[in-house]
Every structure is written in C-alpha cells, then in structure tokens.
Amino acid sequence: MSARLNCSSARCVGRVIKSQTASPLSRAAPAAVTLSQTSISSTRHYAVASRALPTALGKLQLPQDYVSPTKPPTARRPETRKSQMIRAYTALLRSTPLMLLFQHNNLTAVEWSAVRRELRRALREVPAPIAGPDGNVPVDITESIHFQVLRTRMFDVAFKVVEFFDAEEAAKQSNGYTHDLSQTAYEAIQAADTTNPNTAYAQISPLLEGPVAALTFPTVSPAHLAAALKVLAPSAPDFPAPTRRKNPGYYELAAQSGLQKLLLVGGRVEGKAFDYQGVRWVGGIEGGLDGLRSQLVYMLQSAGLGVTTALEGHSKGLWLALESRRSQLDEEQNPKKEEGEAPSS
Image (cartoon, rainbow, N blue to C red; front, top):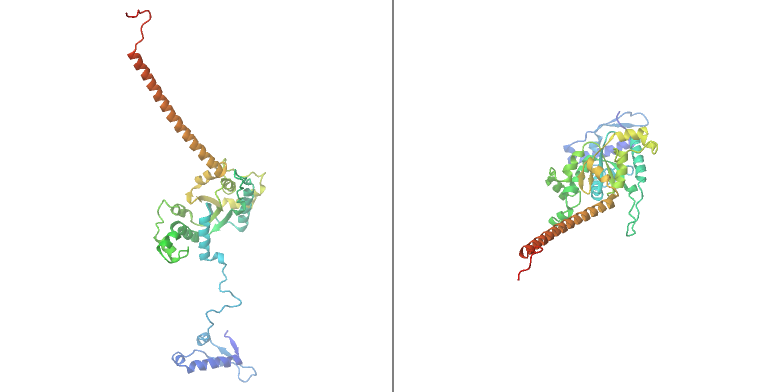
C-alpha cells in the first residue's frame, strides 16, 4: 500500500518538485512523482506518493560524516573483523612456542564446555614449579593455556605472514609500511614459495583443512603437555586416561561425546612441525626441559669420557708395544750367558 502523507507534508514536497522543475537539470530529467488527493471535500486532505519519490528527492542526502544515534558505523565485534583476526593470529604464532592442532566435528556448546572443564581440571593437577638453584620460581602457566577454535582461512594467511614476511628486512629495502596488513607483507607472501617442503608452513598447511581448534601453551612444558594429552588424546601406557573413580566427570556423556569428536593431527613446537608421534615424544620428556638439559649434559659427559678412555687406551697400548720392542732389542744386543758357562779369560 502506498504511503499516505499529510496535507502539510504534501505542500512541502510540492515546493521541492517545483524547485526541481525550475532548474535546467530537472527539465532534462523530470521527476516522476504523482500526487493525487484522495479526498477534496473532506476536512482532512491526504496525498499519495509513488515509489519514485526518493528519485525526486535525490539531492536531499545526509552528509557523509553523519552517524546515526541509533546504529553505530558497524555492529560487528572488533575481534571478528578479518584485519583484527589476522593481527591476533600473527601475534599468537609469534608468541606461542607450543601449539597442538585438533580437528573437531560439530561439537555443541555443552560439549565444548565439558571438554574445557576436564582440560582445566587435568592441568591444575600438574605440580607447581619449584625454585631453581638461583632462587627464582618459574611462572605457573596453567591459567595461560587456552583451547580455542580457529578461523582456518584467516589463520592460514597469518601463518604465511609469520613464515615468509620479515618486517625488519622489508624496512631496510623500502620506506613503505611494513606491518602485517601492509602491501609489502601481501607482496611478500604472494612471491613466497609455499610448496617448499623444508618450511613449517608446507608441513602444517595440509592439516589446516576443515574445522580446526588449537591448544596453545605460553612455554614448552612437557608436564602440562602430558596432562593435556591424557585428556584430549589418551593412549596407554604413556598417556592413560583418568580412571572413573578418580575423575567421574570425565566419563559424563557430554564430555565423552565431545572428546570423541576431537582428533589430534599435529603440532608446532619452537617453529617446527611435529606429527602425532613427535608430540607424544615431547610430552614424554621426564623432568621437563630441565630433565632434557640434564640428559644432554650427561650425554656430552659420557661422550667426552668415552673419547678420553679411547685415547688413553690407544696411548697405553702404544707405550706397551714400544716397551716390549725395546726389551727385545736389548736382549738381542746383550744375550744372557748360559748358567755354568765359564767366563772367557
């Protein structure tokens, strides 16, 4: 049904149409507006405007910097914008030395809540760090471990920026912008060889297919990684799942349904790609990084001791061979006289 205008409003529209008709521009393109009085003899008069009314009032536009008081310029949340997501993902990749990648299949909100609840419970059971020889106590990273769903396409672009774009090197070659969203970064990832198998991107990019979630650690902690694997990807005997008696919430229907829809596909440790077996090896390091350092020191000491023993053994063997040869030569030059033989006069 056509809009009905009051008589006073109709007069205002009529003045606008007359002014448009008086101008040369309006003669070339007359306004296609029809006004018809619905009632002439009644006390209230109405006019009906056709759909071409916005065309006639085309010049009556709001300024470009006008902001509506009821609707902001954008109703989209900042964290869901593409530019903000790429910045967040690049910062995450640069600041996260340990990341596990999971494929998930249609988990509901209740299942996600149950999985995160069991994960937090398992992480809180990890013993708190103790003070080192220098007296400094390491920071507890339990509350800084997050399990989040990734926007795969945005994460793929951010991964390319982190892997193939060097802002410092680009700043030396050009005076333009060198941030992650700049034209320089775009040209760098377009010119990069993403199929090179020696890069971490070429090894991890096949895993970024379909719905993907990431478990991020602020530091490489084998103890926390082992606790997470026991919940999200249990495997006996190294990473057994918690027993029903110890943790009955783990066997609730929502938790088990969500865990069955998760699949560990790989990880990224210190910028290197690891498969499932590699992730399990990192989680199985006894004593954490300190234990790994102790093993490395012991291995170096053992290797040095072995080299020293080998060198000493060869030197001793050479010395004994030379001594035996010297004794043999002395006997040949000065033969012993037989017993009972009279000395010569």
